[in-house]
Amino acid sequence: MLYAVSDKDNPTQVKVFEIYRDIDAYRLHLESEHFKQYKATTERMVKSLKPIRTDAIALGAKAR
Image 1 (tube, rainbow, N blue to C red):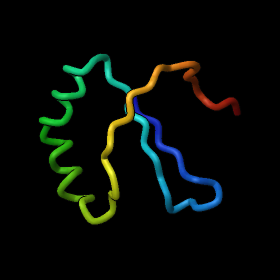
Image 2 (image 1 turned 60 degrees about the vertical axis):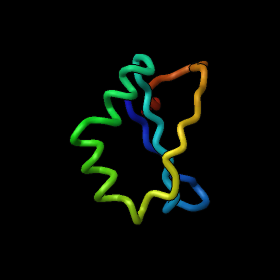
Image 3 (image 1 turned 120 degrees about the horizontal axis):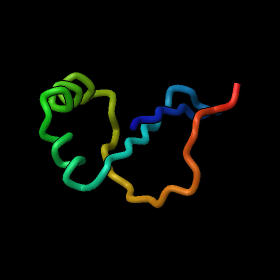
């Protein structure tokens, strides 16, 4: 699952939250061709790919 959000005060700053089933799924993602292409394409735009481990409290779609 993937969520992308921008900072309201600085909309050019984007954070991406990716959710994986487990650590093996994450590792498989890192080795995938689409991720390698993403890294090559965005290397000058992305400042950090630092993973942050979290515990989900509430996840859901924004109400319209």
